[in-house]
Amino acid sequence: MDLHSAFDLLHVTPPDLSSLSFAAAQPAALSRWLAELPKANLGETTRRLYLAVQELNRLQTGPATRLQLLELLQPELQFACAQLEKQLRSPVVILDSRRQQIATLWHALLLQLARAAKLAASEARRLAAGDEQRSLTARALRLALQALYQLLCQHHVLYTPPSQGFWLELHQLYRFATSQQLERLALPAGALATLSIEQSYLACLLLACARTNQLRPQAILRLGEVLPAWSRLARLQAAHATDSLFAFAPATDSPPRYTKLLQDEAPEQLRGLSVQALVGVLQEYLALDAAQRRRSPLAIPDGLDDDLLQHLCSAWSAPSERSFRRISGSGRISACLGISALHYHLAGRRRFADFLQLREEELSADFQRHHRERDPWAKAFDASRNEDLLNNPHRQIDYAPGKAAPAAAEQDGEEYPRHQLQVINHSPGGYCLAWDGSSPEQLQTGDLIGLQHPDEQGWHVALIRWIRQPRGSGLQLGIELLAPRAQPCSLRTVQADGRPGQHLRGLLIGAIPALGRPPLLIAPHLPFQQGQRVLLHVDGRDQRILLSRRHVLSGSFNQFEYRSLDPAEAPKRKPVTALSLVDDGPAEDFDSLWQSL
Image (tube, rainbow, N blue to C red; front, side, top):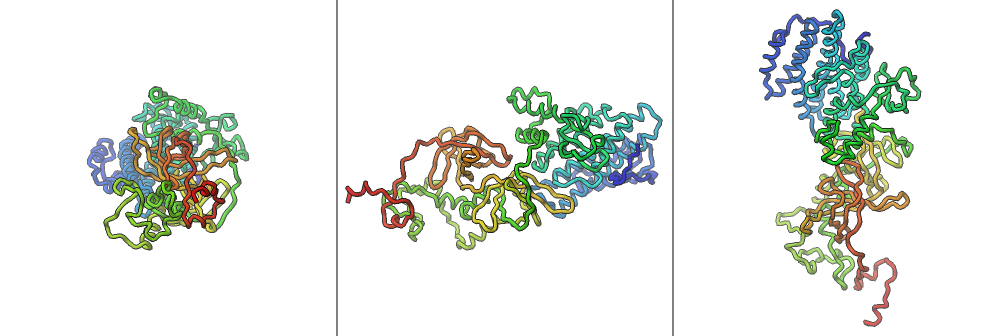
């Protein structure tokens, strides 16, 4: 079987260098050169490694020597790529020019490594058949697949599709291994005892099926570290098998997809992927307590939390039917990012401190004004009745010179800006939106987003379900609507001694009886937990609540059902001053008044 294709991402050219410029073409000489790399200087180290692997692609030498030199270079290239990845770490999804250059360099290093390994495999197959030839070919093919796997991880971290020809190249390398019966040959793999070509190939397929556009970059990196070991629980088989949840066409440049979406393809041209055993082990692990998990047969490092494992169980299970049909859309919609911005806009464009100050308890006075803000002196620092100025947690005195109100409002707008997004399509359940220009740090999968239509005043509460950057297009967001409206509130944990903790932002979502959905509370991811007692501040009063069932939506925030711990309240006493008579509420009951007149 030929290792070349029409796309040929790993284009191999005939070697034309008789020697290396930086060291002798011998393992001992290369080891000495690698030991002298200035690793404290990432730029210089990366430059030297890049030039070295380029020259190895052109070196006229035998496959055994080429592979030995590549296997010495691989750990250093991995070190350089890991350092480059740290340079790319940023909450900002869209890359600036510098980070784009870093990503391109990372991409080029891995491509050069894979290309050199493919060249070694191509040369090794021309050797006389035997154990040494089989070992050389298998090691070279696995090295190429490992480099492509790391390259695929990079694309997933950046929410970008792999280059044209990537999947065809990957399928072709594996098909060549199967033609030589090398795919299951156990090869030493450092931290792993052994890692076969098939396991490396399956790791790529599993990553492609994991819905990583719904995960954050750090979660994708952690997943990328464990999939090669987990891949032994996945299986390639006939596409028509009942447990072939995914399928793909090895002769095309395409990743695996749900088998039910490939009904128009000829079955003989497809291969199936079964993940049933892997999902079963993950589900069993999630059902165990902490002590039992340590004895699980599946290696799960500490960095993989239950939310990520549950996401994988969902991604590697049968797809749910879409509830609503997508409709192509046009126009723009306003958006604000994060719970802080959403709380700010829902509270009437007031900062959190102002939100707490303006909502004070007004239940103790029988004779009071209905709207105290109408009194020009009502906001004076000493106008509050029965107020302890030193101990009230809602009151702050700013001794620094303040700015005028218009300037403060303008500053608020800069702190929690409204973004204008283009509508690509929509359904009753959500939107696909296009993000133009640079992205802010708050733009991450799993975060809250507020949406406001041009002809509406209120804000819809939604979730950024996925992010992607299609080839030749800008950033796109998948938005899931959570509620048509919400009420801003403040939350405080109740400590063991009964004292309340710090005020944190929260959102109340009303019940929807028609859907059987109870009232819900959106709270920050930490420190709130199921079964916790919380002090809820809303509508100017505090009430004690118990957080009950937790709904898993995201690692950024929690959504709880809750119930009140306070006894039923007596009706509020109404003010009886003249200003209360203009209230448009229901007619007053004056029976208690007649006797006192």
